Image (cartoon, rainbow, N blue to C red):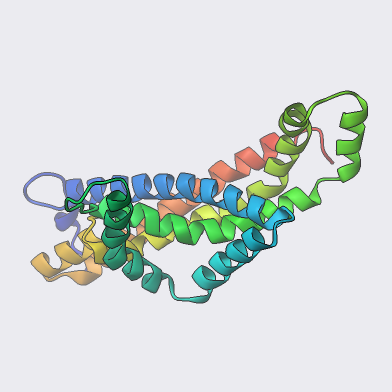
Length: 234
């Protein structure tokens, strides 16, 4: 039975804990998406340049990360992240112990997953831009930076936005997997509250509504962005 009294704010309910967990989910999603987009841009660059080694590395990265379960990627980063960071630190002469917190590990893990999908979206958007426009811009005397900022960039964003919106939805829902790192986001808080109150149905339904609210709001937000960037195009 659904128990509304378990969701009130204050000492008698879990409303404030679920609110903070929702804010943590949003925080991780935004950080992961931002870092993922940066990794995606680097990956796209590596795939598009003529250097065979960089293309091989980029293709290997996207193939492996998309080819294994996402939870496995999170576990690998969770258990191997500290070792990698300490190994890099030793190269710079630091031999102390470094431990990444759950937020950092969760953000990096989701970003690695998100970047593989974003890279394909951005790559497709880049290839969709008519190269004749670049030639026309060069003929007008624009330099490479001006061509990217005024010609290529806006159109890449316009073509990429629908796909990036889908990647954001995936990223938002994938944050539920990082509950295994101990980070208290929606799913982790749901599990804690369910175990304490012995009312899993109440909190699972609440978690479902929270995710549905976030994804619905996000969908509308990206729809507005798409309409904004599509102005002047039929």
